[in-house]
Image (cartoon, rainbow, N blue to C red; front, side):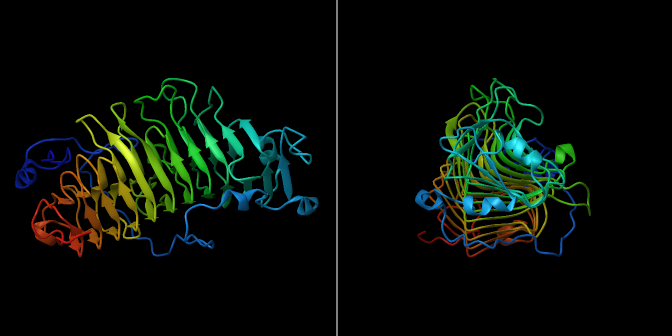
Length: 418
């Protein structure tokens, strides 16, 4: 049986109500945190998410992207900047580095990056709003981390608004054994971005380490009192060290919160490891996210002092946060809720997670709606909720029409074939 995942600040009386034999420690979010701290958050009244593109399928056939973006016939408008360093493959090159093109670009410009490897950090500062950067050829322009990274040790840093980054390979690893590379793409300082159809990979130290850095995409960071917004869709994010996608932080109650749509991505951890506890997608500390139609797998920590989560909710309380239609498998835990209330988790498939659960709600959760999930073939429980309250089966949450074969309390799930 799983160890009680009672938070550090939960009273002994509450813990006694749900006491069970010990087996593991709580999940480990990026930037750590104190379990059991309830965060009062405002309800935002306006919709935050929406895409104009058809996202009915994941990925695009590479043959359709060989000449992606505006071509030579439009470059004479002056709104297209061309980056390249090989005249034989990029005869119309104007800038040798991506950063030099960003520096020269007016707001709203397009930057075409010819095939090749660009070893640099790219910073898109405030004021460069509306820039579109794209690779000519699917994943053919590679933005690679330099051996020595400058703080905040990010390959692509976005602080402007309405920036688009698409069809790149964005890759590490870092040049050192600890904290050498922190982020693949980071959005902060009130910036916003569409991050789409990229391969974001090897965001880690060299060699792979247990240091708490290495996040594929970071939107906002509570620890640094900064927020951002993003739409992260149709990406492959793999071989990260700490996390695939993290949406984190709200400056204060009533102040701006980081928010994101995370959809139609494949997010792959490195598989079984005793080095670090990874999380595929993390929404935390007052951030708001719509997480849907992702495949998240291979986040597996092999020691008993922590657990990995495919999707981790931590210190989150906004009803605008939704976790829907994801497929999570081959992780320690499928979907984990900690210090979380008022969110919706529905229509997900969570299966073949070991040694723990398909969906787990900690003792400090309340008022969450957990509905229409298919939870099956998980090692401990398909449905696991150790909260106490007026909800389903004596928990503090509301489980409705969830399918699962095993449960820690009778009445959480309907016992039917997946």
